[in-house]
Length: 486
Ligand SMILES: [Zn+2]
Image (tube, rainbow, N blue to C red; front, top):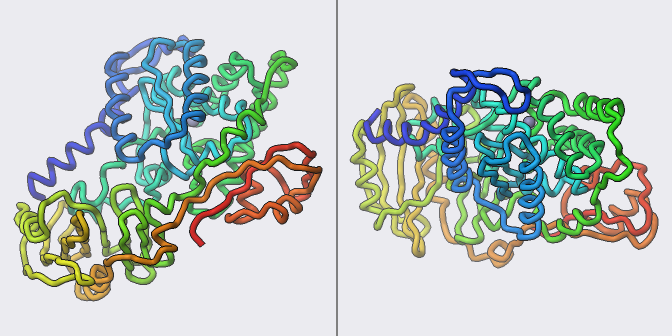
């Protein structure tokens, strides 16, 4: 492996190492439990670590802009944090632009909600419960104990699939950027965070029983095989239904005064009107093997049957045998030929051939190469295509031994890159939540037929936390989802 690639890897990997070390060495008193615990870092180091990771999260996932929802989370979070055991952290609350159902926290007081989980809540109290839970992970200093490939995949957050290290001869090019962070907490940590969540939300005046509704919803969302809603939040957690029952039981036996608590259903739901739901097709979407990007007006056909994913900075496809990949990304080089030449000059990479061949009428520079990483030897092609103001890199490679069998499919895919002019693609809009006030009492079934959605009925039921046969009173606010690609 070349020094340049090593350097890239090192640079992107170090925050992970830091994060992994949280709670490993040293000894301090836990601010929540009062028990002594091992902590390697001082508070200022913890904050520094959180800041670094926060920068990566913001850069890789992007923030979802919605002033009202942001204000609600920021204000609720600030009050809750002020009443917690660690009021002086630089608490930061963000909405990340991701359709999956997830919430997570980083050391130092950085808390994130995906727009996907916000779409699934039905009240301020549910939001408050999850907010309290995540704040609890920070106040109780639950470090990161394990990171595995599976968890990185579960973080979802627009990636959903991350190439295995064995398939990554090119540090950053293969998308290591996001593989930095995932908090895996033990079951004990989760229970403690649940307890803290209940305490914090109750202090804020919310009915703590509402947190149990979140777990019921998460259990259903995880059952749905909808790629847009990979429930990272709960998959590493104990069984959600068990947690729901435990919370209800605890609230019951705790003697908490629930009479004056609030739920805030209508006030929350009104904020969801217009929220983007599911993947945002403006950032590119798949129709079968065909990837379409309305903003950049291009398409690319991946080889048939490949597993594909639209990550934020690149689109990837992996062969069914998981021995070949094709990655599309943007290059910031000035010209196709210059970018190709620089690519082939990388130390450790052996050039086999270079040539010029237009792609769908667009100027392009190609190279064929092989490269040996610490894991294996690969063989592949790279093509740089000039289109509009941009330069696109298409990088396809496989394990050396199977290249002959993959080459034609990879090259055909690269050649499929081209301009899109179809107005229905260029003008595609994301799906959005529309909040409906029921004019009369109706069943869930009647709601689904009177107010149809552009997503499956089962998903509409899940986001409204309703079951077949439920009858909903007049005046209730419900969510439907409208618009989106056909
Ligand atoms: Zn948790």
